[in-house]
Amino acid sequence: MPDTEVTVHVNRESTDALETAASALEVDGSFAVRLAGHDAPAHVHCRLAGDLERIAALEEGNYYVEPNAVTTVPVAVDADAIDGPVEGTLEVLTGYGAESIAIAVTVVPGPPAVDVDDSLAAPADTEPEATEIDPPLDRLVGGLEPATLAVAALGLVAIGVGGATAATIGGPVTAAGLVIVLAGVAVGLLLLVR
Image 1 (cartoon, helix red, strand yellow):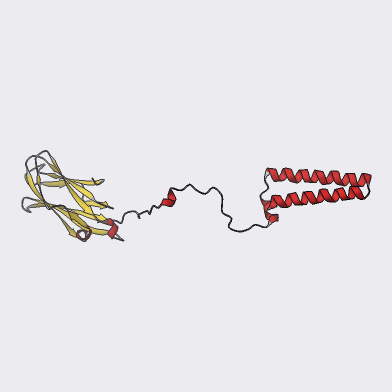
Image 2 (cartoon, rainbow, N blue to C red):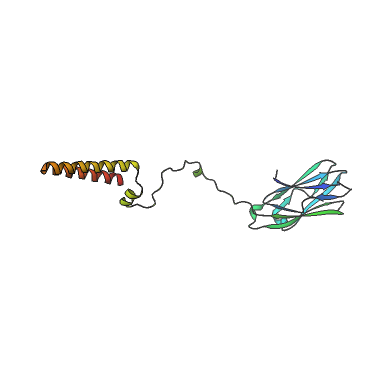
């Protein structure tokens, strides 16, 4: 059942009378006309005119409307076949054409179709893709993590202790120990930066 409906009252005030509150209608797909019967039964004819005929169709043109009953007239619209608005008229006639009303109908293109494939069912990749390789110094300075800061501080403490020991004791063994501490800190920082 279409979402959009327009109601036409048949024989509400007098025989062969047609009334509707809608003089214009804008849709993006199929819609329905509700023929609401009132005092007496009636034969009602519906037809499409203008460019609306190209993209819309009625199941049939003639309808019998019983008193105090509603007859639904589906209007199938192929809005996928258009790129811009299409205008036309829905005409409702009774009394062998003696009484008629016209409702201006504008069909606008519907929302674009969305292609769904199997990739939407796959979990999202949580690892960000590296778009370019950052220089090691930019990574070290720009985005320091707490663990990196802790290792760098520990390395500075080790260099300080090694330097103080080499200066206090002196000799080739303490100098070699300081070189080993410096090399260890440098290797640790390089591993963190990579």
